[in-house]
Length: 260
Image (cartoon, rainbow, N blue to C red; front, side, top):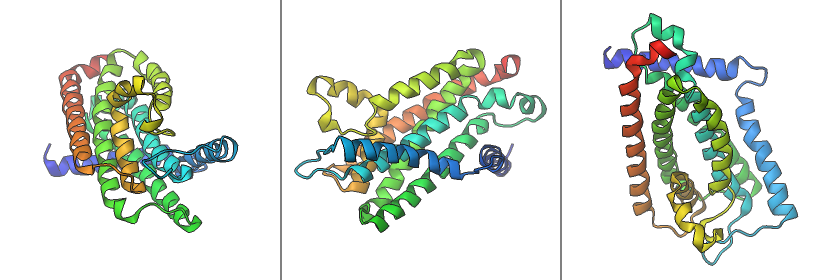
């Protein structure tokens, strides 16, 4: 297939994914925005009103609510992308038998939709925070967007890898749900690196999500972080995940029809 045909096919798959995922439900895409908002409300109540948590960041504590926003929405995009992407091949088994298409596009489509919807959600909540008098740093919007896209690239690589494995080992989807729950509490969604005990910071730094969440927060909250090395690391990890995921996916894809 030509590049133009692939582009058109991807567009159709994205439209279908969005329609099936959101437009076919009563709440539509509003639920994708409402669910993280409910989580944010709960965490804001617990951490701000009940526990009265102060988040260290150099000499100045961070505002907890913007901090949580900057972590929850990228996490939601990551988690939904993997949950949708891992099942993409079995869900489209009938299509594989009828149409010759680059099969990786079946995984690319749900990742694009998840990151687009939650990206819009982050923008909407960012506007709400500005009206509330707790705005993000406007100068960090561009680097935060780049970091968000790099997270999307990393997520796509992992989604391709898991989607290929899931064709042959159907337990992957079930294990993923448990793994994401564990990873949620091991990722800096509602804590900072400074809050992690010294003995565990090496393990914390090995979590790839820490790179992206910290980078997005550093941009949006104007914390004291050297962005250039952080971006280089984020780009390198995303590139590695993409190359690995695509290589495994392409290596296994000729056998999909026998197992999907």
